[in-house]
Length: 359
Image (cartoon, rainbow, N blue to C red; front, side, top):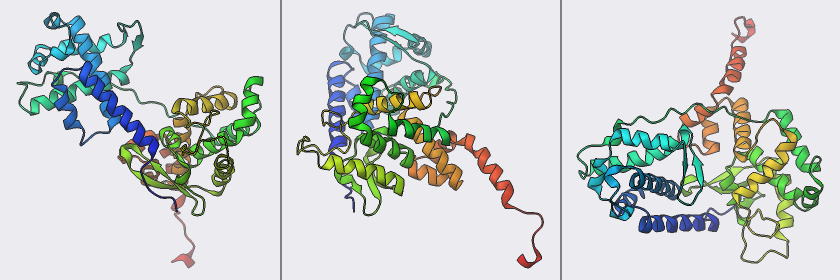
């Protein structure tokens, strides 16, 4: 049976993220932010905290460059908690408008739609709320700022024929450029295993790249993944997925060119662990052939799996559990469109006339 233990990939990712947070706190954020981030540790993931650190850095850089009350402060390290009370709710709204399209000191330009603005505002609100609750702020100005409305995103997924077309593209390589064909001959088995795992289990791209050889248990047809928050859970595979993954697994395990210290299941052509960006590029390469009118990502393949599972079971709680959603309302929101299919099936379950023998 696959052992449930810590994955070196996720442990390394967490260490690097924690190191980056410390760097941001030491160089780019006010001193009082240290207390705030320590308080966050018990209730947020390290990736959430890292995003908060980036977002707060953007906010304080904006304040020092654009708000009159901060004009005499040249270093964000010199900002005090009391200075937060000098910022008005209107100025925070101005900041959100600024985020629509802005240029950093290094010349890089950035744009934010409402989803990105809402995330950055959430970091500010959390900061204000924490110090207001502690009594360090007399009022919480950020509470007066409404979060930007986020439109419901259309769930893009593959239909069954499109799934077949995608698998055919991976299997044959038809439609790839001559240069891509050269690589396809070397990576076809790996790519088939990757696509089948997405479509057959609905795992996240971060979960896939984090898989190690010893996470796989083909005897019991399951494998272990590290979910958000570091939880390790066992997922199951059917015969089709098992066949594709085992074929690659055997090649990967017996590859003499891989260093003994490399435990990753999925490797790049340099025999190092695949990155999430590399997996996204792999999916894009084949999906642009199979479904040119749909921009398919690993997450869209996850949505495809979730849709099929919901259509088959009609049980949103099963879908939430398998996909690793902590809140079933998240699942309901994403798969509300499929509910119509379930309702249609429900209409066929109850009959008005029954055979007398059934009574």
